[in-house]
Length: 65
Image 1 (spheres, one colour):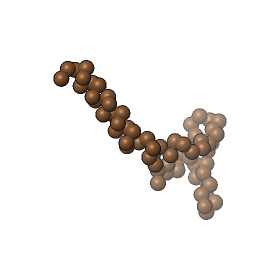
Image 2 (cartoon, helix red, strand yellow):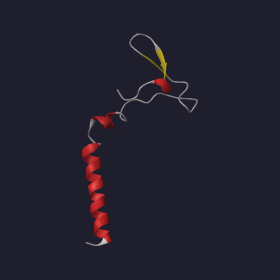
Image 3 (spheres, one colour):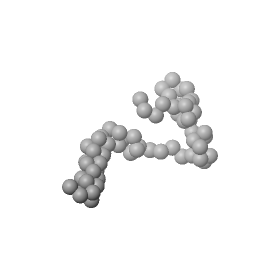
Image 4 (cartoon, one colour):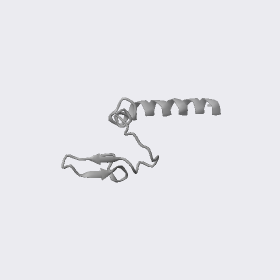
């Protein structure tokens, strides 16, 4: 097997793994929702209001639950 064939096989394997593991999966939904507006550029001006009415700075919010 030549080096070019190995590279082609590796590229196809990587694309297949990305398709099966990431795309069309719940992880993809993380990027599909609304994005808050920011003015500072560092997210320090964004807060989340939880069900108890507590305001949590965006930089302190757990983004994967």
